[in-house]
Structures are given as structure tokens and as C-alpha cells.
Length: 394
Image: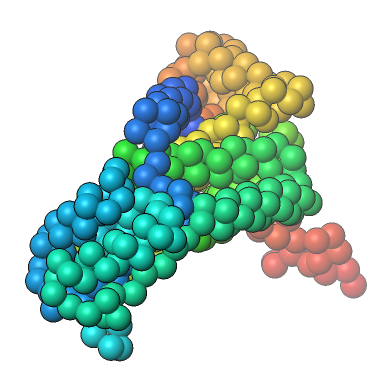
């Protein structure tokens, strides 16, 4: 079939041969640039903090007074007339069981100013003051939410580190946690660049993507651990090649999982917040969409290449990699013949093709490290059995 040789089919079989680990310097450099951009965004653009974090007031006005732009204009006029420098920070249309209304959030006002602004807004719209509701939010509440979220993040990272060390090893734990923080930094950087308001939903979104980012990394690391088990017992693959093979074999699974997770979140962001105007969904939708997409990329392009770099510093793995490369060099020079290659005739020293021998020694994508086969796998029989056609003892 024509589709059997396509990229998707080869990805499913782990035969695409994408050299992801071999280009790890490129991924590390790219990650460094993105982190730098994110930090510059934090320092210059900063975050647009909602009233839950910066403190402020909110006023709910019936949608029957006119359009959202008209409502924002009149509220700003009322603020200018009564509270001086106060202004509307955000305005959005919100639905409820009692009908549609506009929620306008302003900079922080005193209790007296809030009462005067409410009465002025009622006069501007020609409605009763009882039809306008208002709330005051202290920034202390946002600080409490932030401190609890940071505490939850610290506890989560500690639990994850202990689990990964027990389940895998400490180098995998380090690579996974670095990937996790990279995910958070890049997601926060994009959020800062877009300029969406930081609300409690934003914090919930950040905590939600932690689990998804960890899931992607664990899926890949589980395959890496399977491929490198007993790798030092043979001289066919380096640690990086075995890990790269694991990436190829698990790439399609990670991609499918990410696409299935991103579809409903994309609907929440682009349809719910964009087309339908549900402004309360956009902050949560953006964090989840960006965080899940970045989690897929960091698990593939950062976590495993970083793990390979850490493992290559281990003396046992470094010695193994050196043996593998030395053996390939000897095969290329025709000094030794790889197992399974045709032997030259006696006295014919030029009969070995170094390129063919080297090709036979290098592992193919999808291949596993060669190991000893049992007698049954070689078609042999255990001792004591009678051979077909053999003589019997009488």
C-alpha cells in the first residue's frame, strides 16, 4: 500500500528516524531564547492584574442601557466626575438567570467614592440606583490566592520529584522538573505578551497544566527506560540513540493525546471566548491551550535531550558510548567484521566493504539492542531429544 511508507505510518511504527536527540544543542538554544523573551515580557509588559490581585471595584449594569461601549463610556464619565483619576479597567458582557448585564471593573475606590459613582452611573443611564450592584475587592485576597498557589506548586514539585526518583532515577526527575518549569515560564510569557487579565481562573489554569505536562514526560521516559534496559551489555547503540528511538516510537502517541486534549480547549478559547463573547472563559482557555501545546513540545524537544545530556556525564554510560563509537570506527576501517556480515575468502583482505559493514553495525530505526537468543529462538533443541531420522539404540 502507498500509505505504508508515509510519515504517519512510519511514526506509528517508530521508523521515521527523526534525529531529535542529536540536535539537542539547537533545542537548548531555542529554549534559552524563548525564556529570555519571556523574562523581558515580564519586566516590560508585565501582567495585567485583575481586581482580585490589584484591588478594585466592579459595577454590574443592566445590558438594556445600550451597547457595551456606551456603558463603558458613561461609567468612565461618572468616574471622572466623582473619583478623579479612577477609570474602567475591563468591561464585559455577562449572562445570568435574571438576564444579561455588563460588568465593569474599575481601579480601587473608597467606600464613599463607590457610593457616589454608583449614584452618578444611575443618573447617567436614567435608571434607579437599586438596579446597579457593586462590589469591592481587596488586593489582600489576591495575595492569599497567590501564596496558596505557590505553596501548591512547591508541594506538587516535591511529590513529583520523589515519584520520578522512585519510578525512574534522579536524572529523569531533574529533566522532568526542568521541562515542567520551562512549560510554566513559556506559558506565562505568552500570557504576558497577549495581555489578558490575570484572574483566579488563570491561576487554576496554570495548576491544571502541571499534570498534563508531567503525563507527557512520563510517557516518553517510560519508553526510554524500556529501550535502554541492559544497553551496556551490547555495543550496538549509544544511550542517545536508544533514547532517540524511544522518542520516535512514542511521538505519535504523544501527538494524538495532545491533539485530542487541545480540541475542546481550542473550542473553549476560540469559539466560546472569541465568537460567542464569553469573556470569563478566555483567560482559562488561553492558559490551558498554550500550556498543553507547550507541554507536548517540551516533553519531546527538551526533557529527553536534557536527560541524554545528563546520562552522558555518567562514567558508565560515557564508557559505553565510547565503546560503541570505537567499534563502528573499527568496522568502517575494515578491522573487524560485524556479526551477520559475510566473511571474506581466506587471504582476501579487500573483500570487506567498510561502508556495508558499518551500515550493518549501525542500528536501524525501530530496531532494539541485539541480545542473546535462546535455543528455541535459534531453532535448536534441548539436550536429550532424538533427532528426526536419527538411529535408535536397540
